[in-house]
Image (cartoon, rainbow, N blue to C red; front, side):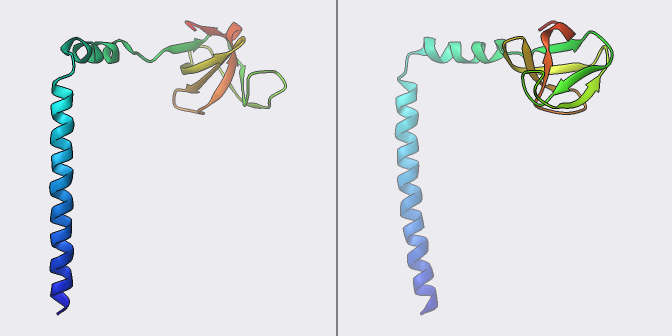
Length: 114
């Protein structure tokens, strides 16, 4: 008797899977009918996106918890330290230090290539 419930559950699962497969097939057909120019340009746009790296240009540069001198100093970095750019706010750059802290802020005066 216990197996009857399991068999019913599996049968319901099979119906749901078949329905999902039909939806996926329909979606695939809709995508196949989309203009090819749009689909062809999508990979090119992805390839053009590259990480931007900034480099510290002085020794003993403070990195902070926010975009301004009123934010706490979290540490110091020296010339040559690289940072992946996340964004900017005014004259402050938000980024992730290579091999170190993430989400830090450094003033643009102390960074090259930003």
